Amino acid sequence: MPYAHEWDEAKQLPKELFKKVAQIGWFGACVGAPWPEKYAGSKIIGGVTPAEFDVFHEMSVNTNT
Image (cartoon, rainbow, N blue to C red):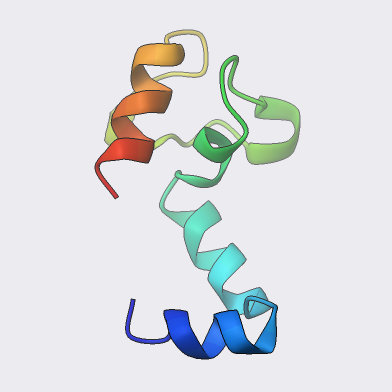
């Protein structure tokens, strides 16, 4: 969050940010259920499996960040 204003002004996010978000298993939650395993891999924050990931998990991740 400390860089949010700077990124907003630049109208872009650093590529490193996308890598970090993917590493912690949060990136696919931005896309929504079902988990896009082909593109986001099988690592999901909280240890949820791709088969278990549903709208409940999507909302949990996106409302708690």
